[in-house]
Image 1 (cartoon, rainbow, N blue to C red):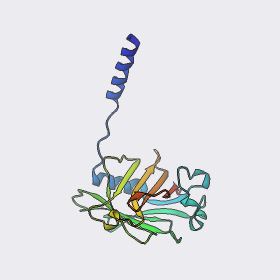
Image 2: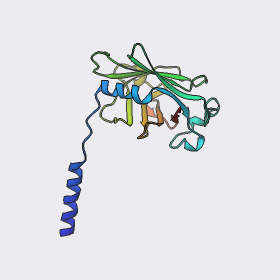
Image 3: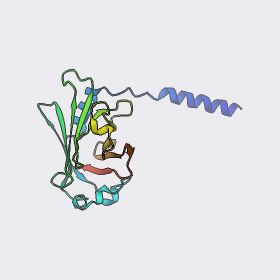
Image 4: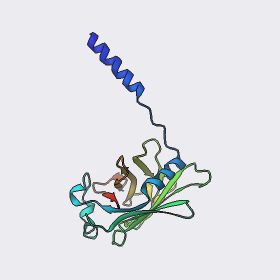
Length: 194
């Protein structure tokens, strides 16, 4: 009994000592993304493509595996107002996502538009509740983007997972079709170009 009570007290003390992470504000998240993502990233080798559904094996993509060719690049455009993601450049699977604030000077919502190889362009909103500095989540904007609330195949979530040192990136583009989560997604691992 005494040991159980002691264990419970230790658990409560530890839980109280762990700081609760505050939600990232939209502008704070945007500035963080600019800081940690800007630059060129190469596609990690095949044996590092863990937790994927095989998109890295597509003939247009697999030649990037473990090479020194750029797999994804991030750059700031529009005098700092937009972060451009150029995914799989110079391949037939090339896609671009633009990340931006609804109002750069008074950012209330971080948004994104994904120009997809599926030949559509869903809009996204930043999910502050699920995001951390190393796990950035964007959800399809079902209120303002028609494709998000359709049966058309489209990307419904974008999830960017960074390593603690910000040198490894797992980019997940979660697909939906017929209103349900698909079984195949575009998930890739990248390493920051040195």
